[in-house]
Image 1 (cartoon, rainbow, N blue to C red):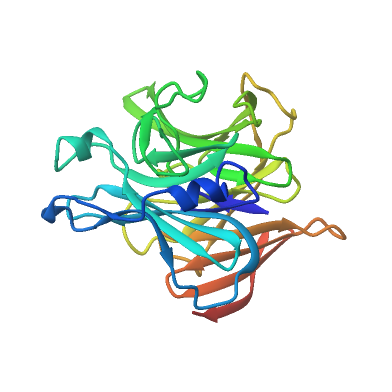
Image 2: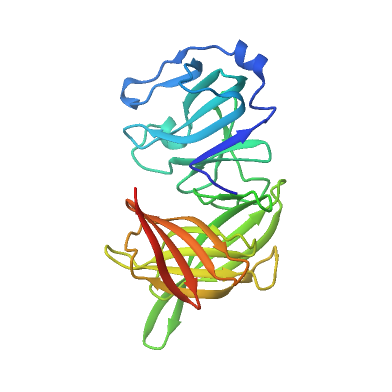
Length: 311
C-alpha cells in the first residue's frame, strides 16, 4: 500500500480519536478576513450521509486554497459511532501571515511518527497539531531536512518507510561551452526520521521535468515519469533499482528500464501503481493522464499498451 500526501487516512490513532477531547472541543466557526476566500472551522459535527459505524480514524486532506494561493488543511474524524467531525485551518506560512502574493505555499500533508506535517512547494515542512490543525513550527525533521522536503512525499506501507525525492541539476563544462545534467535523488526514512537509504537516478539527456515517481512493489526499485519542457512531448519512463541495497550516505541506482511512452504526452501524468509480476518479472503499471487510465506492460524493455479506460 502506498499513500500520497494529498490525502492520508490515519486509522485507530490515539492522538486523533480521543473522543473526550473532541466532545469538549468548541464547535464554532473561526472568524477570518473576508478576502481569504475560505472560512476556517474548529471541530464541527457533520451529518453522515452513509453508515460509518465502527470506522475510527481521521482523514487529512490538503486544500482548499484562498485567492492568494495560501493552502489550508482539512480533517474529517470518524469516532466509531457514526459521528463525523470536520475542521479546516490555514497553514500559517510566512506567505499567509504577511499576506504576500508570492513565496512558498502549503500544498500537501503527511502523517509520520505520530505527527502531522504540511509540506510547502519550497522549503521545510510545518509541524501541525492533528487535533486543532494549528500550525506549530517549521520542522527540520530531526535534522534530516537540510533545505527542502519534496511536497509530494510518499509513504510505503510495505516496508514502513517515508520517501522523499529531490530533482538536482548539475552543471558541467566541456570543450566549446557548458551544459548541465539532471539526477533524481530518493531518500528513505524510518519511523524515527533516521535516513535508511539514499540513491540517485540519472535522468535521460534533455529530461528536466519530473511528472511523477513511485516505489515499485519489489521494495528496491523506483519508477520515474519524466519529460522535456514544453507541450505535446512524449513522456519517458525510467525504472531504477538500488543495486547496492540500503546505503544511507548515497549511491547511484542502476537503470533497468529507460523507454519512451508514445501514448502519453501529458506532463502532469501520474503513476497509480507499479508492480513487478512474480512469474516473469515483467513490469505492470497504471498511469493516469488527463481523463484516461493506461494499463502498461513492459516486456523485454518494450512498453505495451494493454488497456485504456476513460474516466
